[in-house]
Image 1 (cartoon, rainbow, N blue to C red):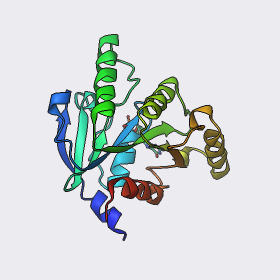
Image 2 (cartoon, rainbow, N blue to C red):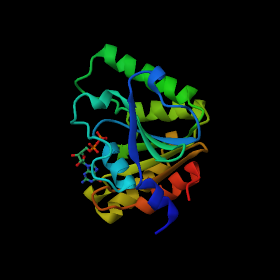
Image 3 (tube, rainbow, N blue to C red):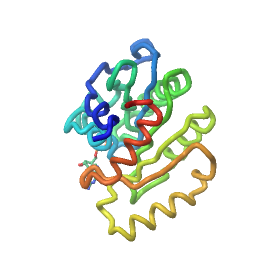
Image 4 (cartoon, rainbow, N blue to C red):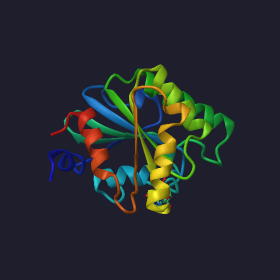
Length: 202
Ligand code: GDP
């Protein structure tokens, strides 16, 4: 087993923050996971960490409005950003979300990159594209997981990957993309390699 796998599976919950003031110390390196609610972000995080319920799913009330920090090793963290596009959220809450996430992305020195989770069957929603644009503006590298790939046949999944690579939002440096399935554990090694690179694990 590669060193990165060992480190990532040692993840433990550090803290949940509802405001900038509650973020843990901005030292070392971290990678944030983002995505539309229900895209499969918690499942991807849990699969990457090899733990069934490290990140709670969107159905868990309360927790979903927080930025959750998980520690892998000394000053190495994974960060679960609250899912966007949550149907039952008011406009005020939506703005609060945007403000907190933008503040996090802009101000976080230790942030090395962002993993953006998109359902392979519904990629590049308006918000995904806006999120990619934020990252581009901030010169933040990103890695996209086209998740729930098990819902498509192999050939359809490959076609979706090719189409996604050609999407206008992908026509700039700094973003990579892969197929992923939490259910089938597809693409876990590729994701680990990305995390390893950003977090300098191992
Ligand atoms: P989140 O809201 O983005 O954190 O999404 P969750 O991880 O809670 O997943 C939303 C739903 O999609 C749940 O019912 C999961 O079981 C399902 N799901 C997540 N990942 C996969 C996957 O890779 N394959 C399949 N078939 N279902 C998935």
